Amino acid sequence: MNPITDLLLRIESHCAKRGITESTFGRYVVNDGKFVGRLRAGRSMTLKTLERVEAALSHQPRRPG
Image 1 (tube, rainbow, N blue to C red):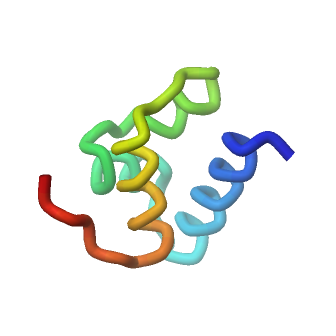
Image 2: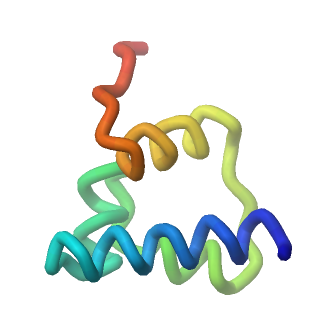
């Protein structure tokens, strides 16, 4: 499976479990309500953004910086 597809499925599942929209997830995690949609459309992300998303999905607090 494509890593981005896997990440999107994990985000969808996380949002469903929490009862939040994907735009809320994007705003909370990366300050971008269109983040998930852009990812679906093929946009890339930085490693720092990926780390923030992974931290949110695993409920680990972000490290400052």
